[in-house]
Image 1 (cartoon, rainbow, N blue to C red):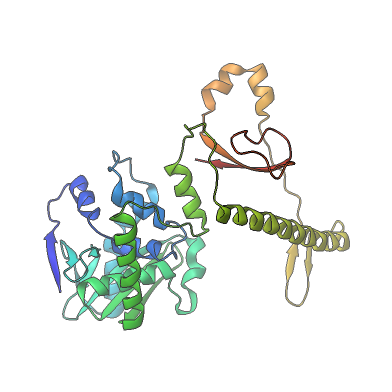
Image 2: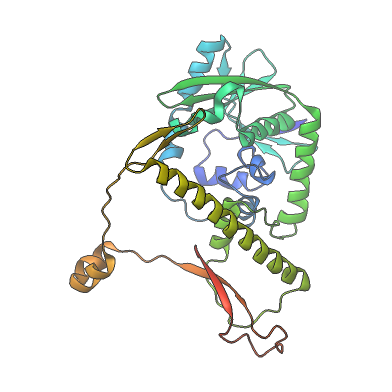
Length: 335
């Protein structure tokens, strides 16, 4: 069962406020940790923070929105099925934290349609019947909210192809999806607790943005659990360095065999080693000789430097600080 909220005539800000009241289909994959472009932390921020003034739409978002009607039309031509807009936001009665703002509903069939626009670089993600996992979770989410047993997904791969797939109800997957979303809403959103890290680049990006500025100069004593994580981190860095060296050695062997030849082959590989010219601006020289131009065309970015330093005195007294001794490795993260 679900309730319907009319979206006809809503201003964009009003629609965005409605979206804050639950987890939407496009956020389901992120909550499950399978969206490479959005993390659970992004969703958490969307639901718990005051909505910022909306910036101009990104071009990719604008293109996807403008071409939605075209994708729906292509789907109808390919399948013979008629589709219509719903002009409603659906909300599950049993699971009110789940909402759905669907692209299209299928006329005469208990089904819906999700329309996607994909650039040519994403073509491989749709080959051989594959559907990107975060899009699949989006469709299952819509089925969970609306109760519909079938959902179609159609994708226009720009300048390359048009594909569509039929997704059937999977009770086990949908039940698990509901449990994950319920836990996220009750344990994170409702209690205002940041979701646990998941190791993805999307989470790192969201974390850097969330804690963009350092303002507290006190020293925080970390738990023994986090200390053990730092030991594990050091081991992983050693393994990564060793593997990187081994990889580099293999590439050196190939380059040595190729000499001045641009292309090489094996029964399974094609290798190219071509000359590429590139031009870079010497920013130091430009700043020194033409500071007016440097100031005009340079911009300031805000970063926080993450640094782990191994102390020489492993049993330092708490409160004295760690000084400046010992080895360190740094990681500058753009905020």
